Length: 110
Image 1: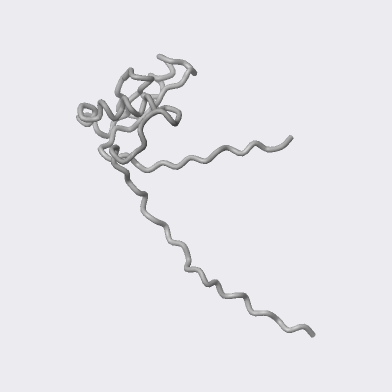
Image 2: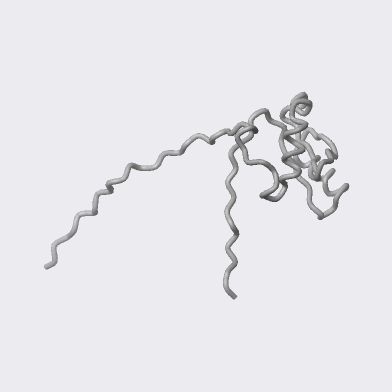
């Protein structure tokens, strides 16, 4: 009769949830490398006056601020009414920018 094996003990420590890191606008890369860089540059340039409405949402396309809305749905409606499906950025107005991570989408083979 074969011997039963003990489960191998893990040498690594269990992972614990880490708090979301916050990054100040000055620490981010300059505009020009990623989608919506122009919009983020516009957001950062106008941030001091936008902070008067902290917690609201701003609609930006290129260097134009289309408007500021109290909730995300209202901001999305404004963006679609003004720009259709051609692209715009919705952003919550906050003093500290959250650290964002993006992954490249996987295309399934047919």
